[in-house]
Length: 431
Image 1 (tube, rainbow, N blue to C red):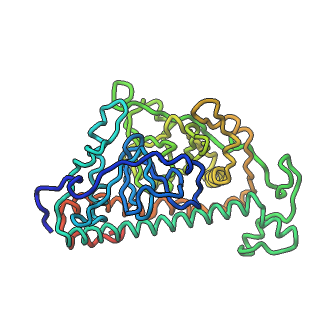
Image 2 (spheres, rainbow, N blue to C red; image 1 turned 90 degrees about the horizontal axis):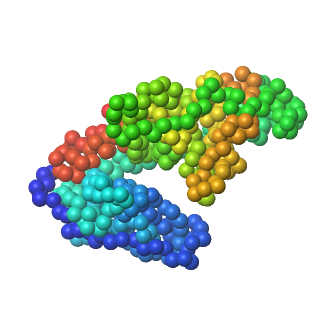
Image 3 (tube, helix red, strand yellow; image 1 turned 45 degrees about the horizontal axis):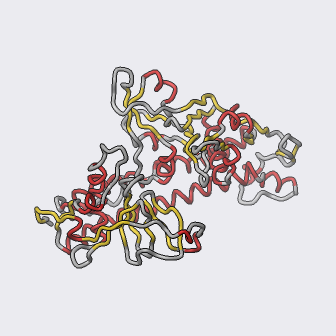
């Protein structure tokens, strides 16, 4: 599967153009309008008309750089995006997507020294695209697509597991379904008798209203051993900032949850700052600054061995995030689900303050005012036994390892340097 030693330029095999500002009439369009508005960071809205009807590749022109989105149907690329349309007579469109994915950061690097880095149409058009035969292009695409499909399936499974964990949390600690059923003389649904016996059969009054007898509504902060702000460190090591660290930002949290490609920055911090800020399994990272009028602060991630194993250095929260260390591992599982519930239910809006252009999470107020329903130890242990493995499996699944295999194979396959019989074997992250 040897390739021609002289690669194409992207502009030789595709049309490179730019997006446009969406019309004002689409400003308030909803998902029902069907056609996505796509910028450098992904879908930013919807419209009822298309700028392009054919399949396109979209990447950032300014702002968010280096991501690549393949859109098969009608779309409206925004004015902060560049658009690539394959010349199907010269290149397989799926192969072009993988080839461009392998070299896109070369275009980003062309203007990295500028005050406001951007990628121009000329920059993008000059990127090298390997010159493989049509049959070789198809075979390479098939191998990479097979890995992508498996990664997508694993991520869907993880999303389902997260939904199960959240449904169980809401049933037990928000709606009190098992207690309500027993108080009404019914058997709790979907629960074995031994677990059902752990729940009380009546309620008692509290400042929050009726809660299960023997349970308590505790301030969130009272269940933490540490609450500390993050760090941003220095771009390069110096006399003081000598410790190499990975820094989790709020923007990294969705990618870490989804096990998607994640660009957590590597920076350098002072050893004394690392002592209390280094993350350990069971910690929570909570975003406390950086929200917007459409997105509240309060995104969070539960730290597991799987998260930490992605990095070859200590990991700390960014300065716009905060580290919460729960008092016990079991309490940590409960608090992680509590934070996820608050965010998904839109309740973190109640703790957001936006007096300037940047929204901030009112951490001190939250830690005092937010109440966590703490059951007796037997119920908490039963909850952790059910939900804990789901949380750990999410982060330790094969998705990340398969994605790493794909990223390792990508440049070698695309260039034609790796023969397909060698590349076809890895279909499982454990192989």
